[in-house]
Structure formats: structure tokens, C-alpha cells
Length: 85
Image 1 (tube, helix red, strand yellow):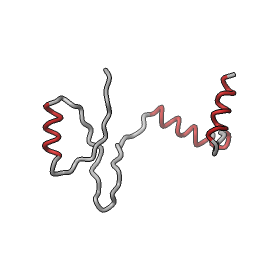
Image 2 (cartoon, one colour):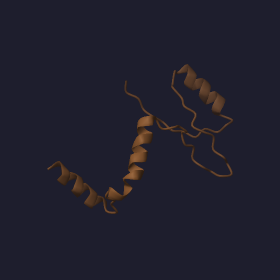
Image 3 (cartoon, rainbow, N blue to C red):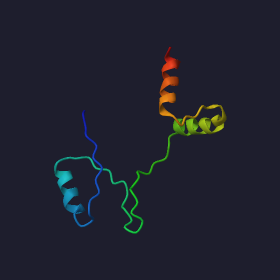
Image 4 (cartoon, rainbow, N blue to C red):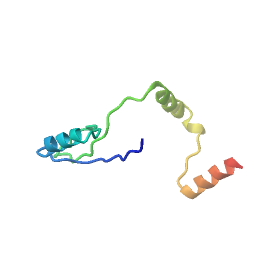
């Protein structure tokens, strides 16, 4: 199934109308978070990484000293392309 993901900020007063419209059109919605007007922060979906992701994060932390870091994208791309040869 092809889908388009839309992230929208909707005024609280308009939300019930929009929510009803989405339900009638069978549009799947996910409420990420409300924006605190004082902080003006962007909502972020809250989730907990699964076990495989957590292990990958821990492995990355433990092996950080052996990983090569880049400040130049062109150099990074060059190294990636050289690995393929």
C-alpha cells in the first residue's frame, strides 16, 4: 500500500473537527504530543527502542573509539565507495 505521511500542527479549537473528518475518511492518525505554547517545542513521538536497537546502541558506545568519524561529507562518501571496490 502506498501512503503519504503528513505531520501537521492543528489548533486545539479545530482539532475535534479535523479528527472527525479524518475518521470519516478513514485516515490513520497518530497524536505525537501537544505543543507547549511557552516552550514552542516541536512534538516528538515517544517510543522505547526494541532489544536489537538497544544492543546496537550499546555496541556503538563500547566501540566508539574504534569508529572513524567524519567532518567532511565528501571524504566519507569517498571512503564508502572505496570499501565497495
